Length: 216
Ligand code: SF4
Image 1: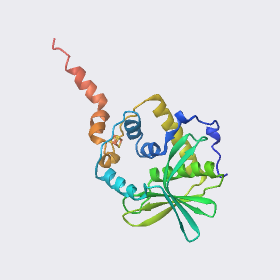
Image 2 (image 1 turned 90 degrees about the vertical axis):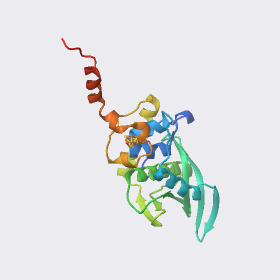
Image 3 (image 1 turned 135 degrees about the vertical axis):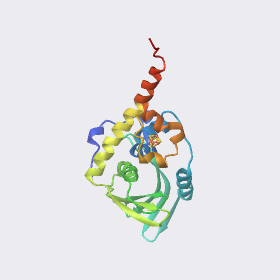
Image 4 (image 1 turned 45 degrees about the horizontal axis):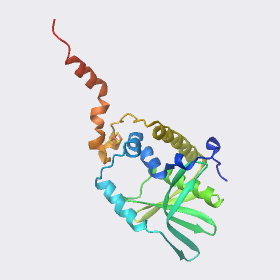
């Protein structure tokens, strides 16, 4: 196996599994993951609607064979070693070796949160099949192009760190601070999160306390 989950050697109980989708949200913005998966906040914007539309294509479970490759759609995934659960859009079986393919809206581009989510699918498939999964791909719906992702040790280490930090947030019910940066422009939760307001927390507290200072 390319990378045993040594830091997560204990087996997780099902109630402690975390959704792979939460990992993608965490990798985009830890506060977003907490708002969705702890506070249960969900708002739609153009980007989430586009994402939902793309996933409707691959959300129907099914199986087919294309030449030498067996293709499974909407395949349930889990790993007791990593404590993860989720679903793969598409898994191709090249012989007995799984090759996960995740569908994303937008043009071909590299994004860390996409790679982490795909790597999480790969470690689940490794545990489920006993096969090493070294590669997968992101299919970018707008450009209709695949981008191959290699699940190398560095990506697996980043995955391990992200899973551990996300677990702390979900189990501790904590809400991380708002980075209030360019990520917020495309975030559907902006009106619930109010990043500009909470990022100004100290200044707001100073101004609020000044309201109650009386002139001598
Ligand atoms: S608005 Fe910004 S800080 Fe708030 S959840 Fe979205 S990306 Fe994170």
